[in-house]
Image 1 (spheres, helix red, strand yellow):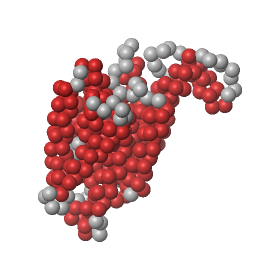
Image 2: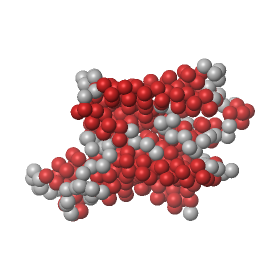
Image 3: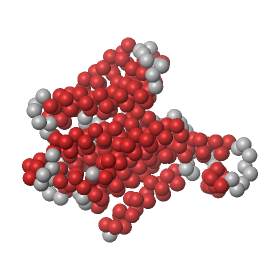
Image 4: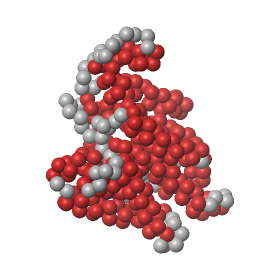
Length: 333
């Protein structure tokens, strides 16, 4: 039964992504969509310059690919952070990633328009994690609780800076900042998808190859040391690469919360806490979830709803559920 669940999670991004291409504000039959995709791949039809080709190839497909990459990055980062902190209520933004990226976006839109939003968001997201880590080091050895508390402090600091920028900019720029903070794939294109792919692959490949070490670290610091694991070094490696993946995701689409919290927890319930299985299935499950959420966001109404709103509407009740359950089932306790 567990193998069947795992197989479903593995193929879910392809299945959900394929279905999502058929939905959108511009109505077209599935036959037309299939014909456009086959023609782009094999040039077997003579479709001419029709609007359906541009919509499918240049609008829907890059959006689906980008959503899948972002979902995999956020879910994979969440799995890593929950493993090294031994806390299923941790998500990729606990270390200040979202607040730092938000400040980078606000600076770019408000005062540094010549600098791309993606680069600024990525740089400040990385800076926020670095500040959280250095703050935690003031307590000596970097352990779980000081690092989480440092992340809360850094998040509050950057949130205050964002508020200052929002207060100073003109209303038109303020609207752009607020829209970016909600998270959206409305500006997705193939260039943005390639940027996300590079960051996600670089960030998650080392984590994937080292995923078995998460099983040792999730046992606790003392047990891991007894097995010969360098806790400080391993935690820094996992933090660095998972931050790279999450910061890349935030930089291309804005702040989308709850994915890194919900998906790893649900996958853990389905297949168990073994990170050798949990991490790859969280990547595919996160990709499928994000594609599905974005499909709802762009088809629910006649206008494009920021996908961050959809994930927040599903994530808040789920967080309450986790708090009531205490997260104990996730770790087999």
